[in-house]
Image (cartoon, rainbow over all chains, first blue to last red; front, side, top):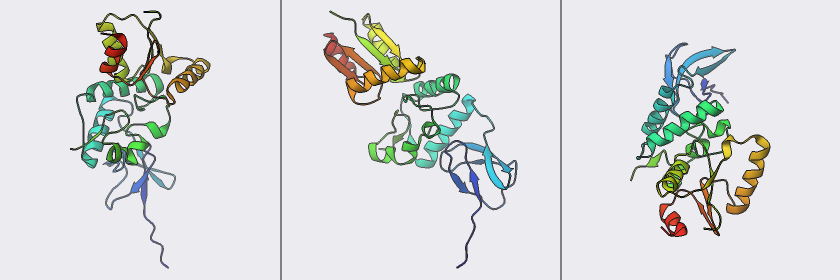
Length: 136
Length: 83
């Protein structure tokens, strides 16, 4: 049996490892296909990881949620700006962009949170806090 | 009204903010606990209270006399406050 090793990139936001595309090199900016985070490719040890070029900045979370919605085909409603304000508040007070409507400040609740990435929007029509909505 | 309404909220949650804005706009005096800003020991105590009242950890929670409202719901607030 032949084992085909797939090179992967670790995303520090959603903690997923996504496939490394041919032609990518250190320093390239790519987008995590799982959570929409913009990443700069770096080799750490013998693994590819994505660094967050604008970590903690408003630009980072705005681009991430827009990109995630684009990837998934989700839409926003008029709560978007208030929810983004909440995400910025979480980052100021608790160190990262955790869901503004949850108590827990753990990696799985970084926006887009794991329940969202696991299909909450498909099932319920929206994510827990109502940032991402399924298109009607 | 016998006792002031009590709001359990998260400081970052926009629905909690809307509930508080609604009460402010209707000039309702209320007590508020911003659960995420409490220190650890106090937070555990309050979360236990909230879970006992609502069986979940969802915010805002508004207590108006015997009525418990989970989530921002202006119709329920109006009814409970007889507005």
